[in-house]
Image (cartoon, rainbow, N blue to C red):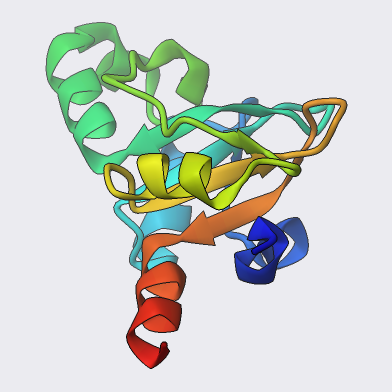
Length: 131
């Protein structure tokens, strides 16, 4: 089976840009009620995953963050614990399942490593339940 069957295209994915501020990222995550979102570069590449935990520990450990103000600190200044591992668009189901078991979503990259969307664990489980 082709993994593109499960793809949520980039145009429908909520993500943050790497040049966004901490305040902007927090607003986005609050608005859509997501605890983790992909970070995308200006060039359209996947740069990692920003989580609520990253923001929480960043606020605690980066005292100058509060002094600077959340609207002035870029999300790239926040250390991330881990990033969701992506798959290439031509990955097989085995690769996808190996990652989706440990991640809420798997970023999907094209041949030039540009971010094209995500595959969610929920979509994969829903498909498997219907089978």
